[in-house]
Length: 568
Image (cartoon, rainbow, N blue to C red; front, side, top):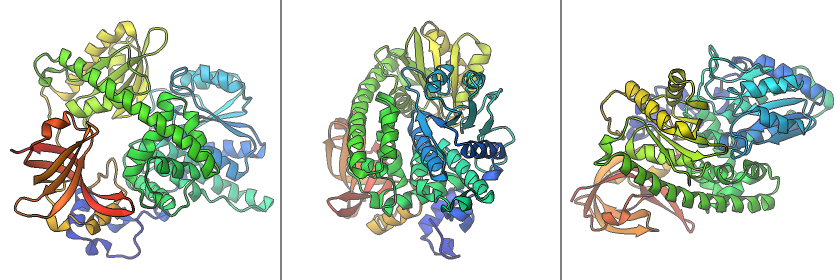
């Protein structure tokens, strides 16, 4: 939000003030999401060298090839880079996205060989590259310059690129370490525009400077979809991007995806970007080819964007079906691992089935992690006896560091790995699965301790029934953007169940009442295990978010249930 005047914190509702305080908001400046609050691009180490390489490229009208990751952050980063370079006046700008099923992640030598067919003068990576030592070296030997923009954690050795911008480089002075790949690319464009302005590039050609704010809807989408921490910098980028979408200034591709999901751009929230738009864009990279998602984002006209968005929506439905099947199979594997109960599970879990889909194991690992509150790696078969794994972790367990420790102690177990504190990707030989599983569980146990730590859900307390109104729900929506690291307000309370039914054999739809009161409120719980077992409940305790439900031009307040407990 942009604060029009001082004294905002004094004027907000006491409950919202308490919510801000719980998120360490101590001043109005921390809530000011105007662009003027963004730190300067030159605070990123390597930015000067990056800009000079790009200035040379634009002066020489070099062919730039963007190599992107195959997730939503990579897709939006690619769209921002391509459109941004074209707005600056570059000559030929093309892109390449490695198909995850053929080439895997990053700028590998194999991808460089594919890239050479396009005859680029310069390769710029977006949302990848920081671990691509061999690929960068191969490109340089082919006389192709390589610029890396990334946000993933670097290893001990950096690639020999012509320039690297990554806020997580050692001793980097940028105040936000949480930028997504798309945020890094946006900052590179901001610095490049400033340099081109200073050398008279735009004035000499009589063209206006590009308005990079036009790209902020992509920045918002990639930032939220990558589940990076919404620190102040990212909240600014997300807030500004959402405002463009809501006001009808967003790109046709995002509008088309929102429409395909049956939603409205006018009331879109950060949560919608994460749970509605992001998954549909990601579905292209998980099941097909992320080039499809990028083409949707780059579509100049709504008609062409809608055709691609419908395909993305279909892929997302297919992904859900695959995910549901894999989850049931994973739960059966867990029963085999823990013969009595889940408390007997190892500290870190590795799961594998030769029928599992490579593009969906990340979601599977996340679902199982949420259920058992332990780090989980789900594997699927790739080519030549290799298993591709996707890891998801819990608070306090840095999953990339765990993998690094496994590799240090067991050099022959891991083919490759990389990632974040909470998520990582890796490859192992099929014959090493059992050995890797034991090594992984052992090191997680060392880091986590021997005790089982139950999942703890923190809430913002109970909410008086007088505030369970549309006006307060809208106020909470407007007080964001909310997301990882700046969580959406969560409340808890006990309710009488006035009505309950099961939807699509997955979800629960309630009408709830506060005990002793007859003020009814609608509630819904999505993807509930064994939903029919809740039929007949009279009283429940729930952790919930207050939300606005839009249906047939009607806006009503409803409770979004995150956890529930039967009390009768």
